[in-house]
Length: 383
Length: 250
Ligand SMILES: Cc1cc2nc3c(=O)[nH]c(=O)nc-3n(C[C@H](O)[C@H](O)[C@H](O)COP(=O)(O)OP(=O)(O)OC[C@H]3O[C@@H](n4cnc5c(N)ncnc54)[C@H](O)[C@@H]3O)c2cc1C
Image (tube, rainbow over the protein chains, first blue to last red):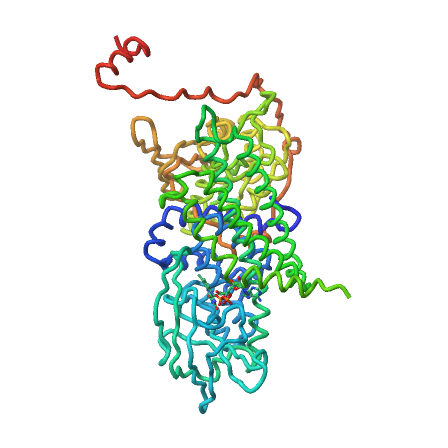
């Protein structure tokens, strides 16, 4: 296995996840696609295996590993061919819970971390709103001080794990008189708190086994001790965590693209047309050869970005590159793989049909490609 | 009770292995390697014996290249206490491997040697039997259930005619069949703990084992490709073809 970036333990971790995916996910994923969510016992099982606490402290049941281990998780889950399942897990492990890890105080961590790591509770990050996505500062949800608590008002949109989740990290404006970047705070909101409701489950093109919600806060009372991190510093928390989110989205895309290529290589080498196999057509094997090269390039870029992060180095540019490149590449790969599957690739029973739909959102969510390219550009000005 | 459990490094069962172009053996370059699935079952059984308070120590042993340390480490992550790697770069035959185990048995004095019934590379199904012969211990192959009561072991074996129950005395050599158990996954915390467990390195030479081959490999070639089938119109045509083309009925 890869010696350059990964330790023996990380290679073993990869091997165990791969087997878990083949035995526990692949045979069941289609049912979850129909149901619209991943059953809780699967997440519990992952918790038992330590897969939900890869990065967190041993005192809470975690394993203290680094960014490269999150990349392994995302890449291997991506190979499952069920993007919705991957989103369910990765939002929990690498997009929502890092807020608690990075900014939670001891009381908050003691309270939530063990359940999040064991999979007893599933967490959610709610930043996007109907009127503010890429432009985080444009959010309208407010939180106003009221005695020893805050009252949240507003709504959140496209929230992964939103229907079935337990613990929500919700961003809201706590000071509207200053620049938005200085007036956003993150609150821990629990399912069942008064004034908080899931207004609807959203019906999506892909990621169908992932539950996605619109959330409504109507004078939702949240005690002050549920402020995550510092008051009015939430924007910086969100920006910081974007790096991890984007790295794992790139890794997930690479896992999916690799798997799609493997499936397609098999398909074209078996499929007969014009007295030979599709593989015997030079144009087909060359297109697939080039895609393999690109996917390998994307994989190395993602590993490199994750490695920089694990060394504590600034890597916003590299992470933005990996997110933009890999999440576009997975779409390019799916398009071609579906093309070479012919009509079968358009039929619901083929994995590639689902993978095409699942990949689409990855160049949109967690920082659209255009937003990523702006991040790269900002860091490319020659003086 | 002390258990020695064998783990062999083989090509992953998902890999379609091809023959080398010069027909000198399987082409294993850049192929994903893993623990032999039957060995994994043996490890699982040993770990369950430890969890049930029957076994006190599990030693995972592999005979193979330096990289087989990965498979020993996996066994440690699954619950073995320590490992021994008998390092060799030659592809040893079952007899040589059995002799290595015999030497380790002399040193470690285990009460039981647990192995897979065969490894999916050579499919020899010999190592366990040979260890039993060399040590003079009792043996039960193809185990689908193992029950221990003091120094008596009852093993249900999967044989062609059905199930056979045998009773043995320890020390014993037992080989695992597919239905003995369902191996667990190594949890991440256990993978991290395995890092701290020791693996002792030795070699066939150090163990005083003569590894010279008894068998000469003439040629490794892929099996003949299966011809595509034909669809018959009716039973009459089928019978005609079975009679006159396949000549399997008359
Ligand atoms: C299935 C799904 C799950 C999601 N899960 C979550 C979640 O769990 N939590 C959460 O908070 N959010 C979540 N999101 C929201 C997601 O992060 C946003 O959709 C994303 O940030 C884009 O925001 P938007 O949809 O408002 O698009 P907009 O911001 O309106 O952008 C629309 C398009 O305009 C272009 N664009 C935007 N900005 C620029 C620019 N600066 N320059 C050039 N072009 C630009 C891009 O092509 C972009 O796709 C999820 C979304 C989906 C679809």
